[in-house]
Structures are given as structure tokens and as C-alpha cells.
Image (cartoon, rainbow, N blue to C red):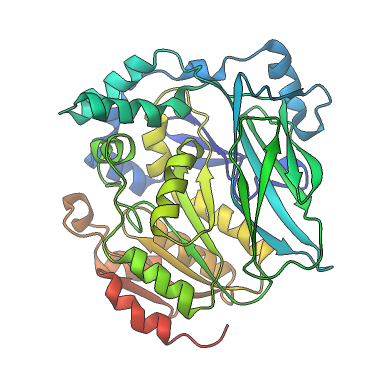
Length: 421
């Protein structure tokens, strides 16, 4: 699934999508995600602009050959592509979820991100900048910061392809577009795949991650979950909090949520999980490892990161998030229009508004909405946690559909009370 989001300035973002798909058919979708008034007010109050104004340059990640630059405009139809070199390049293959089309054939969107190994320039300066904002650094922490920042600094690779062994059939992915990402809707060989089954596919002659494909039939429950401050501590209300939890600290699950998700998985007969986040796709290995450690397998849906400096990372998480999340949910709905989705999010950003907007578009698609109220944060208690905020966000959504909770234990009875899908 492709949800790549290119960020062009501190206040606007341009959608292109890696996960779910960025396009209908073979064309990229381009859409402008403007910062809303309430996002602007919140960012100013939390001093995001002050933190972002002197963040380091990342423009070196867009320095690639003239041929790659020119031919990348051709997108998936580019005949002048180059195969990745395992000695100089690396590729991330994103886990995905297979669905059945109207003819019963299994299909999935295979997304790949292409990079040049260890090509990030001035990484030490970028690390120093982040360390300075976080403070209290030691050598081990700085090494952690460097490892997690490397994918944000490494040069991307447009106009490249990678070969995939898909159930014994060699299949080409790509070529990648100007964002260094390719997205291919592929039929999966075989007709006897079952709901809940997982297969693993590997790249051929490439330094690449493997891709796990989970098969999900057309009916049953499904879970769409936010990540930051819903299932993982991110401190999205604070710019330095985001930097610290993302680049310096060991990832920490929200208390009680891993156990709740395992209960959901068991109680609802192993539903497919979609983890929808405004975090950039450059954090995929970091977030994938976190998910594998604490939560059920599922597809990570992340935003594109085509910004020129590290300030874009903070903006990614705090600007245009409602339009971005709704666009991704619309794509998931295209794949699973008859599934009954349970949407889980939190109060830090626009999850209530996003889920409510999607409910109003497809009321039969969303069975329940659960919003974690993030407490103990002054920036949130002053407005985002008010009852009036939730009542306004969920206008037109039946009261029995949505619930605001503070502790994961509140949801067990609600999950248990759900009827058959």
C-alpha cells in the first residue's frame, strides 16, 4: 500500500502515497494537504516553529544522476530504469495485506523504497543538531540517533527496480518515481490462499528486506490503528518529545495496549491490522520492529518524506494529518468495502475528526471508534481533551459508535460485546 507524502514547505504537504496506494491505476495522485487553523495554533503554542527554524539540511538525499532525475518523470512506464546494485544500494519492501478482487483473485500492493548505502552527507552534523535539542547525550545515545537518522539522510534512488521472488515467479517491482518509491498492484500466484495466511517474499540479487503478505478475505472485522500516542509513546504534543522518543529512546508501548490488541486478535478471530501513522516512511524499520515486538502483524501505512530539511519530519506529524489519514482510509475501503472496521486513535492529533469524517462517508464500514484521551499534557488538556472537542468532531456519528477512554482496560467489555461481523 502506498501512502507517500512529500512535504514541500513548513506549512504544506503534497500527497503521493506509499501504503495504501498512492494512485489509482498507474498514475500518482497529487493532492495538497494544507495546515489547518487549529493545527497552526497548536503548533505555535507548542513552539514547533521555534524548534524547526534551525533544523539541519537534508537536500543531499535528492542528489541523483541526471538520467535518473529526467526519466523518473515517466513513473512506472519508465523504460530507462536501472536495476538496484546490492553492493551500493538497499531496498525496503513493505509488508502488505492481500485482498480479493471481484473475480476472487488475490492481489496486493507491493511498495519498495530505494536508497544509496551510507550516502547521507554531514550525518554527524545532523546528529549533533538533534542531540543538542534533546540534551543530556552520551555516546550510546548518539549512536542510536545516528542509526535512526541515517535513512532520513541517505540519498534516494529514482528510476530503479528490484526483482522479487513471488511464490516462485520472478516479478519486477518498479521503476521508482521521483520520491525513490515504487508501488505495484500485483496478482499473487495460486488460488488456494486462506484468510489469515501469511507468505514471505524475498528480493533477488538485492540487499533488501523481505516482505510479509497477510491474506484477508472480503468479510469479517478489521482493525485500523494509529501508532503515535495510541500504541506507542511519541509525545506528539512536544517537538523535543517527538525527537527524543523517535531518535534517542527505546520505543515504549502505551500501557495496556499490547495486551488489548492481543485480546482483540483472539476475540475477533484474527482480523487484519492496519497501522496508520503520519510518521515518515523513513522510520519503517524502526516502527516495524516495534510492531513485531509488541503488536499483531499488520500493514504499516506511513507518510512520504520528501522534505529538504529535518523540520519536515516534525511538520509531517502535525500538519494536514486529517486529510492524509482520510485519503488512506478511502484506499483501504476500496480493498475491503465489506469488512467491519474498528478504528483506534488518540486525542493528540486529528484522529477523532479523521475517523468521524470517514464514518460519515461510509457509515456501514466503521463499527466502532475508540479514542485514547492522552492526559497529563498541558497543551492537550487546554483544548484537545475537552468534551466539546469530541462532541464537535463526532457530530452526526451515533453516540454508541464512539468512545473516549483513558485506560485500555475500558475497551475489553466493548470488544467482547461486539456481535458477529
